[in-house]
Image (cartoon, rainbow, N blue to C red):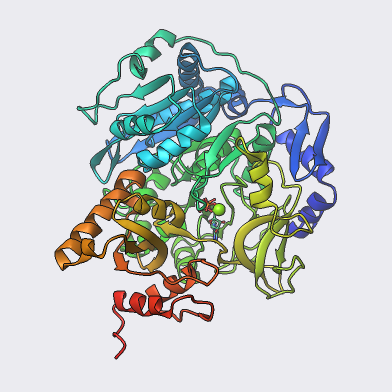
Length: 634
Ligand code: ATP
Ligand code: MG
């Protein structure tokens, strides 16, 4: 067995040799002629000239050898449904969806926006796009019209695939009217909307000439064979938007061959999942974890994937473990928030089931605090592996890699840089930090296969956003603070920008601010994330009104607060709703006009606001403290 260190070193010293070897994990229709083309930094092209297809690697190659093996189990504790699909059945369903899309005019390079709950058709739609070379853009079902409209305008889809409703906690959450509103708001109008009618929203209205019922269309293509469209390795497979701290969300563009190889390699070296085994990722297809480790990763590895619609607590907090027992889950992937939720419930729920099939539990998406890490590892008595990555990278940057070497798991750290990433901790002047010195987590390009190839439709933004941290050297910035200790373990210390993480959902403060700013009575607003025991963080808003009369009485204040919260609900969804809206007449800003976000956040969390020497108007601080319930200055 090689060591992680030697494996990583080889990947950095000789990426061509290293990745050519990993590329054997997938099937190529035409071999590549060059492993890496890095002639135009920081743009990297992997497996140049090679032709392959994500759907072929995820479905067809397994369906050919093991047609009757399980490929996907759909479990909904919301609708009490359980459906098992074999690889042959999955292939057939994907071809039906692909044929339906083609009949609506979708072809190679066209965008298809998928706005759906966690139902099998969402997976079919993603794989169908991959099959015919269409570019999917999945938008998380929790987003409301405003966010959806921005994404429609950026991706300009020919087709939108959606459903009447999702279900959460036993209640139907209608989607259709949000979608209709989004299309009204958007400048770009998709020609067709393909609707999966689950029968959950009896009221939804079909728009004649635009909306097409999938169940009906599907019957025309029951036995249709849809051949795979072979794509050159660098051709785009999908667009996925980050949460959009900068107001306009960044459309992460993923390639085809590099992504397939990166996922196949990660399934082997990090997640330790192989042919015939089962993986259960509790994420949502709207997020990158859903793309990589509900849909593509496990299927490419020939595993059965569990697609779960429901919460971790219904019908009781044992539901996940019941699924593990029933389907002999070998690899499980979840988020630290979920672990913190489970921690609040009786551990008997966990111990009631036979979990002996489970090899590892992987957690990612936010910092995994030491106590939670220690607790869950102690209860499950198996390695719980913290892994750090981003929508942009598509697969882990930092992780323990038990498929290469079993290293000691330490609490509170996602361990080591993953092969392919030349990761360093940088000082703000571009030099590299010493051990135990805090700095910015950066990656020296080329980024490995699978990482974003550009920002959709905006090469310039790709460079200016991600590679402009220093003039020299050109480095990919993660926008996270980190530290590397003397033993080489890495710790992530939070973000260099501001994003709120509510129960695992990432919300840009900027997006919430923009929604609130849309209210006619509001002049200016700052939104910060405030630590919340259950949800991780909650947004809190500090708003300046245009006219003091609008908050002259407690009744008026309350009414305006309600109206502002509704404004957020309507444009972003209830998940983004601030816990409070405090009204002020001035916000604390620096003399250069920058909001003192960190100070606002610190005060809201009862901490020291830090250096305030640059504050423009000290009265702003007093107001803020009063609003937060500090004693008024005497
Ligand atoms: P945006 O880029 O629009 O602000 P986002 O960064 O919130 O969106 P993601 O790409 O889903 O969206 O999140 C990646 C970020 O999540 C990382 O940059 C890091 O801050 C955090 N993160 C992910 N995994 C971990 C982890 N294991 N430990 C600590 N932080 C993590
Ligand atoms: Mg980010």
